[in-house]
Image (cartoon, rainbow, N blue to C red; front, side, top):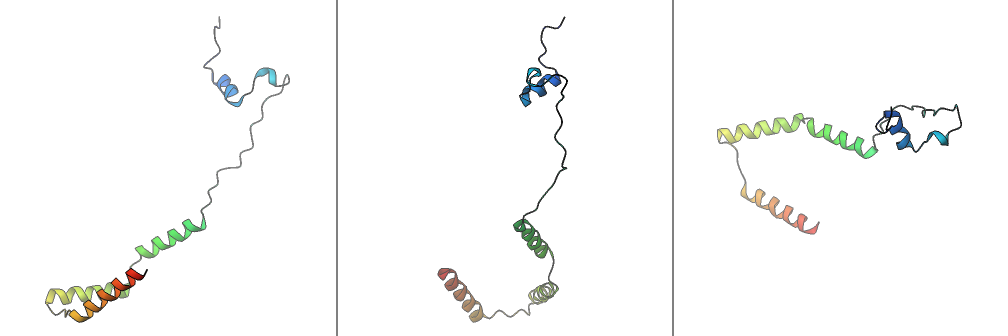
Length: 100
């Protein structure tokens, strides 16, 4: 004896889709929507962000060489710091930051 039909998978699908047996003509079955397959579209902004990330991860050989030279100069004590040049750049950057 069947008391309740609740909980059966096919009935749940009918409830979710809003389809009742009385709503369909006799003998007609529901057709599944054609599967178009999954698609992913990447926006231009995302593509640009990926390119920037790749550039950041790519080491610049000239920069790497300059950093190695500076590191060696600091370690050997031959790195000459010109106070006036440092002060000029600090002032210049401060003024530029305040304008922008």
